[in-house]
Image (cartoon, rainbow, N blue to C red; front, side, top):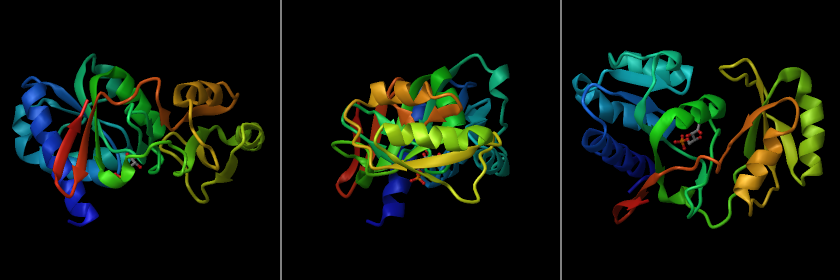
Amino acid sequence: MTQDELKQAVAQAAADYVAANAPEGSIIGVGTGSTANFFIDALAPLKARYKGAVASSEATRKRLEGHGIPVFDLNDVAEIPVYVDGADEIDAGLNMIKGGGGALTREKIVAAVARTFVCICDASKLVDVMGTFPLPVEVIPMARAHVARELAKLGGTPLLREGFVTDNGNLILDVRGLSIIDPKGLEARINQITGVVTNGLFAVRPADVLLLGTAEGVRTIA
Ligand code: 5RP
């Protein structure tokens, strides 16, 4: 199976999960990235079942609307039964690195509201220790150099994501060289640096369910 076929299989499994677990008429949280895009496509045939969706990025909002799925402002939504999103790395505790697509802050906000976070990944994303994938950190532009110096003190090598501005008008520093043995501690530590909006560690609020695409089929890990 190709990587895209694995992504498609987990996306379909996620659409089935949502159909079985989210009440009719509810609003679904939808993530960002190529795997999330397959999920949006799998959700579309069932759109009459749901009131609509909350999008974790402008790209996702456009794709949802392209399928005729109403997109709600999170401020107008009190409950999200299920949020479905991909990850760049995930460990056995369902802690994740996210933000390869630069949508980490909105993803973290939607995840904070959601009752259940379903992560959808192909098997290449499951790792023993996170940190091979550079950790994205969203920063306020005027704090870029200060935050980079502070991240270097933590042992990482931050690199500005060239030519990229987030949906929130900020910059991304991608931090290489971190071996993340305490994901929750590091997430909190980096978020304390003045000028950081948030970082791509999802450990304080990890996933609740992982649908993992493997050559043998979709594994559910919870
Ligand atoms: C975007 C993300 C994505 O979920 C992550 O980058 C995985 O993307 P893909 O499904 O394309 O591999 O966090 O900010």
